[in-house]
Structures are given as structure tokens and as C-alpha cells.
Length: 161
Image (cartoon, rainbow, N blue to C red):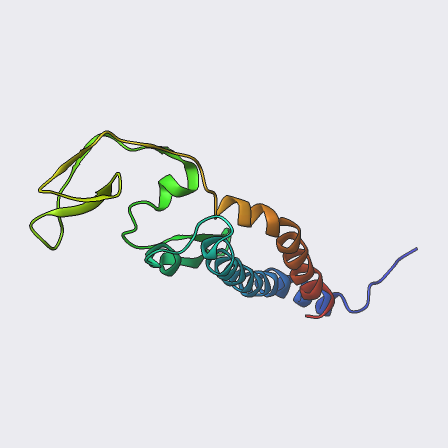
């Protein structure tokens, strides 16, 4: 007894195209999800939920990036640029003792006991900052949405080539 399979060439072609199609759909979905997560960090976490906006530098530094080499797809959301306090706000930590000097004038001005005081420099003893997570907490809150979005992208690539 012999069996034959009809349409095997079409099946082979579809299966050969599937990895590229899934890669493209996953990249598009990852780009969309990463941009959405970066926006959520800027618009929610850095607009009062985790940290209040002061200068806006940290908020402006938040961006997403997608890297794909065909075998690996990586989405990164983080602080891009020269925002020196980004990591200590996310993870917490201790600053070392340091000297504070005026930036724009010849003296620092500050209030002590309601009185305005001036100094050419101040020795700061260092401080301990608690973690004020804006990245990891946003990722955790979006976890189910991200998994569902990526799952849907793969399912759609399989069902609708």
C-alpha cells in the first residue's frame, strides 16, 4: 500500500517562510510594546507615581531600542544620555561625601533655620536614597500585556501568513 501527499510543495514553502514572517511580526510587536512601555514610564512613573518631575531630564532620557540579529530579539527600555542619577533613583544607594560648589555664581545660597545663608562651598556628608523604581515596576505591571501581545503576534503569523 502506498500513500501520497498532495500539496507538499505548498506546505514546504509556507514552513520555509514562517520563521522570517514570525521574526518580522515579533519585531513589529516588540517595537510597539517597548515604545508603549517607555511612554508609560515617562507619563506615569516619572510624572508623580514614583518620582516627581523636577528638571525633566530623566523623563526626557527614557527611550526604547530594539535589536534583532535574526536569532535573538531584544527590547530595551531605559535612560539614554547623561542623567547621572538615573540608576540611584531606580535601585537606591548611597552617595559618597562630596563638596558642593556654586555652578553659576560665586556663592551658594540656602535657608538655615529660616535665615538666608551664603557659602562658597559646602561639604555634603553623603546620603542614602531608597529605591524609587520606575523601570522594573513598569515592566512588572505590563508583563501580562507584553506576553499576550507577543503570543498574539506569533499566532497571527501562523494563522495569517
